[in-house]
Length: 167
Image (cartoon, rainbow, N blue to C red; front, top):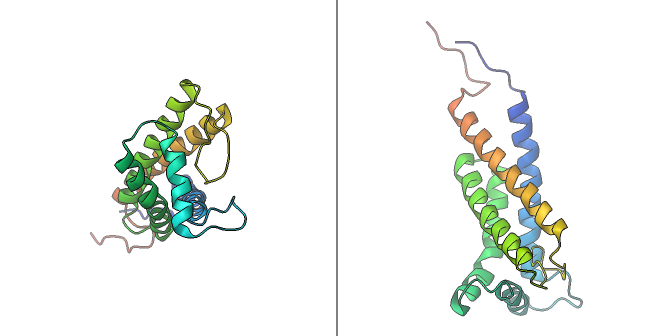
């Protein structure tokens, strides 16, 4: 069996994509927990309350679900970003991130198409929801989908540093 190259387009794309997405997710979660856009910094509980207002502005969830999302999503984003950096069980984490990004993208797209005058809430900043937000989220969704496909392909291929099989 021929040994595969340690460097190819798929592996380089996986590394770069993982670093970009991990940075985006870790920063997004951190910004929501600590309300980086608000000075002076409020306590975490207050910051999550502000994020709950942003989640509620999408008019998609009942109040209990809004509170659940506002109190779990930032921590899930940080955890998924760290797991993406670690690369352990990569197909699992890229699949979860793709599903999360799809949900976020379609929520943003729905709000944009309904002409809701709201803040995105993506990075816990008072960023108005514009076509640029939709395009950015579409790009991130596309990146997560490509990473998921590449992660599954990479999981099926032999590791580049394994010894070739003896015949």
